[in-house]
Image 1: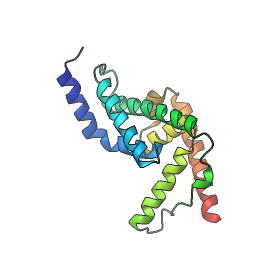
Image 2: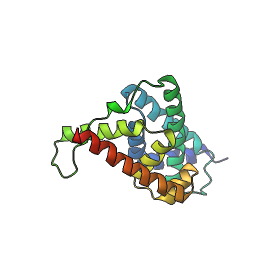
Image 3: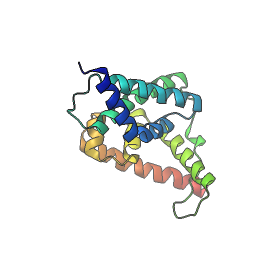
Image 4: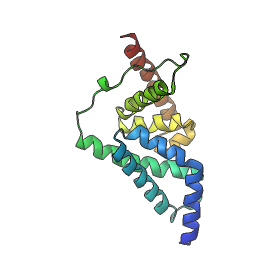
Length: 173
């Protein structure tokens, strides 16, 4: 077993390097601010605990994402069971076009609508999409999720097409 100091040190290094990604993941997975803070806290606790077992067989980044996504998946499963059928796709509004100069408010609004769209996805798709938006490649996403790289590439392609279709429909209405 590694000394606690090593565990603390690894945790601090991970948070410094990937803390922003944890916050973005929590935002993509949970709309309610208080539950989002709870989710983020759960991620941090699980991450710190996980470093007692970290053996370096994968990169620190992969380890952080795997732990965080496992916690997020558990959280999403609980929320889906708790709120089954309460939120539909009608909660998603049009996104501000990328070539349209938008104010900070419009960008924040567009980001929230994107996060709402992501939260409406099935948990596995949600996980793949959030990792893709963190600019991980298919092999890295595959290592974190347990899918094959080919399956990840296919999911990403389908999700991107669905995203474009869903937001094009909302903008055209």
